[in-house]
Length: 220
Image 1: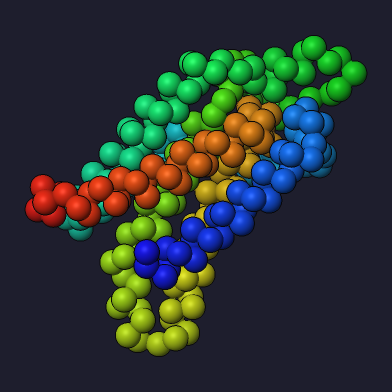
Image 2 (image 1 turned 30 degrees about the horizontal axis):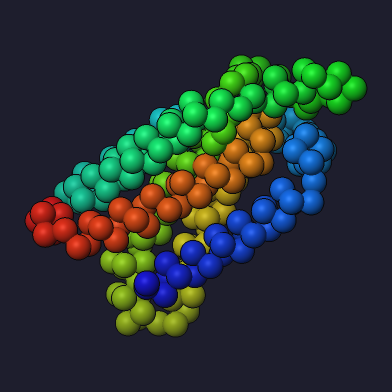
């Protein structure tokens, strides 16, 4: 594994361990309220639109490499998104978990924080498709940057190398914020986005491993 992607992977594992600790320490509904303990109008607007990135804009960004004739990058993202999406949809329908809006209906003494103007969903909560898409996109970007550009940066200067590795960590922050936006909007519980992120992280890693071994893939 390339050092750059190793940094990204280790940071993700640390984040996953932290989230797992929260899931272990707190009951599901209490944790959701804890993570939604502070709302503001600015945050409402930010997370509402940030969450929408996984509904179209990220797919458009994935098409940009075509302008530089880098068809492999776009094909790889499409392959990962389709594969991860298939796994996610199977789990969603096998494990038909209620969304926060439905779960909190049984506890009238617990007020669910809602964001004005957001259309609430009520079923197929587990796992989160938005979280998966955010992590698929960012992990694909991290893989290509680490394996195809880090060696060039390494030859230039140590300072640029540090900045390059920091950019990979920013991709993880970008994905994590996307996942958290679903909790903030009360569309998903933390466990939903946690598993969604695992699918979004693991799928590109597995596909990258098998694609690199495929002779047919090498011709692109």
